[in-house]
Amino acid sequence: MKKSELPDPFSDARKTKGCGQMHDQGDDVTMVLGLKDVRKCAHNWKTFQSGAKPGRIVVPNEEYIRETRQIPFEVDPPAHGDYRALVEPWFKRPLEVAYQEKLQQLVGQSIDEALSAGELEVVSDFALKLQSRALTVLLNIPLEESETWIKWGTHVFRSEDSPVDGDKAKILYDYIDAQIDQALASPGEDLYSVLLSSEVNGQKLTREEVKGVMILTFAGGRDTVINAVTNTIAYFAEHPQSLDRLRQEPELITRSVEELIRYFSPLTHMGRVVTEDTQVCEHAQKVDSRISLVWASANRDERIFEKPNEVVLDRKVNPHVAFGFSHHNCLGATHARTLLKILIKTLSERIGKMEITDHQDNIEEWGEFKRKVGFDSLKVKFEETKG
Ligand code: HEM
Image (cartoon, rainbow, N blue to C red; front, side):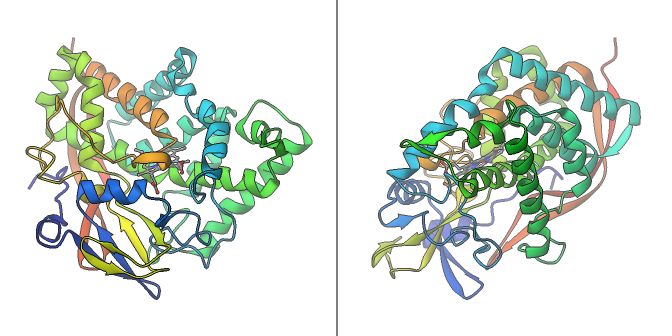
């Protein structure tokens, strides 16, 4: 098996039952596995809500470690739409040329560092740095701020042995509180300041609401982007002919980003809380129980995707749900897609060879399912394009 391969652990359960089961801190969670079922449940917010107690829709459950509601993620329609309309234009800025030029510079810097090191550990020394630097562009704050986030390391919101760690999460919450104080004292053109002066339905956003948006922006865009970047490097290290092809046919890069994101599915699943007795995959589901929408399984559904376990770079029809589905679809998707496109284009132009010299898999455990989502560490040798 290639090191960049991400097997699908959900295949049997998806084909035979359509659902899986896991246990999370006192709750059973029904894992919805097929693409059509995932879409149906994601769309049906009246029965499968996001606006339950803050933290409860996250798997593993975070309700014991935070009280702040993440916005717009833990809000249902119609209020969801009001918040979303407020932040959407900000999160579409990656479509602007000036934004893309900034990302291009940061990607160039990361590739320079890889080439001058010759060999480096991609998760900490490439992906974490690039993700953090790119986030300064999204927040519109000075690049130097990324040094603080890089120092937090890859495990800032969780510890080695526990995926939910209140003490670690507090580092982020305290940091955001301090940043909000600073923006209140001297407002600028950064996301904190913009949110602090914004209104929803004629009411200024409260400090707690601003904090809810900012926590989500940090948490939602961290591990997901780090895994996507690391897996991209691993994939092209082992498929140099694919990188050659994209060098010759750069018009395929947009499609290849969608396909890689489908295949990687950096966010495995996300939960919902059931508001009435109902049925999921033909099984009874009780009010106040939890389900999860398994994006990673839906993206390998053989009823929808031909050759679901292969990366088909020029896949034409690709209705993947790696960025979610319906009203909660990923707000950071434009940023993530733009970053990955620039990364792949730059790799194809500047890198002659990448060789994986060492690696440690990052395996998630969800009840009966063990899923490789990427790497805890990935050592790669980089060589420049000749000529
Ligand atoms: C929502 C995946 C990057 C911010 C989501 C959802 C998924 C997802 C599956 C839907 C959650 C649900 O329905 O419960 C990803 C992946 C990423 C990525 C795979 C990278 C490859 C980012 C980035 C940011 C971000 C870079 C911001 C910095 C958000 C926000 C939401 C969200 C704010 C909630 C949107 C809403 O509730 O309306 N993401 N995400 N994500 N993501 Fe991302």
